[in-house]
Length: 252
Image 1 (cartoon, helix red, strand yellow):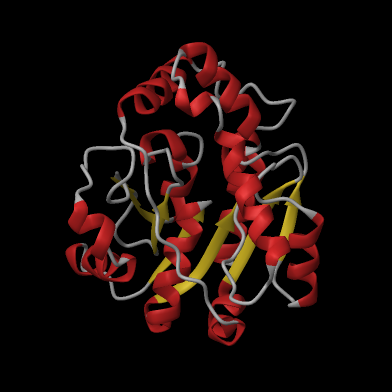
Image 2 (cartoon, one colour; image 1 turned 180 degrees about the vertical axis):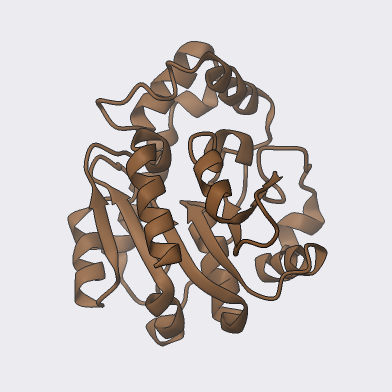
């Protein structure tokens, strides 16, 4: 999905696991396109048109793929924004190519850091379990249950939009399960990334919001904000607030 004026600053958007750009940015894209030249990419191997094979699972390197995006759209430097796994993609690229990344919005995500210990490993496993058992038995009923688990308790953003619900159910039924490889990074490697990034975390996010994670952000002086009444689908639960935070930070 490409939109906005090419004369505006480029903004590359990365969706999360189990989503695609059509679902992820439905409540953000119109406003973002007023300020930026927006490139919302469907991630290779994700829930869209690409079909993963062994070559992808064994050899996919996100930073090389993102290099191709920069070259294809003739971009020398860009802002980035991601939700959940999309943050990892932006992180992986900035660490290797800091000169090509301006500012970064990181939503509903934590950073894979080496040496954090068993507690963080167990928290990571617990977060994955949020998707079960609904993901194993795709039906409209389970799709609604899963969306409500991922969203804020007071938000019906997903379930009230019938087209969005149908799209999500289609992905749930017919997409292959995504196997992701993550690289953990040393804190020292994050110095440039930390200076550029703003983390937005929903206070009802069962995956990315936890006292231990917040303590980590505080102790290591990361720039972050807690968004009230938002879950893992933060940019949809509180889309108006998130849109303002994104444009304010990227333009400011």
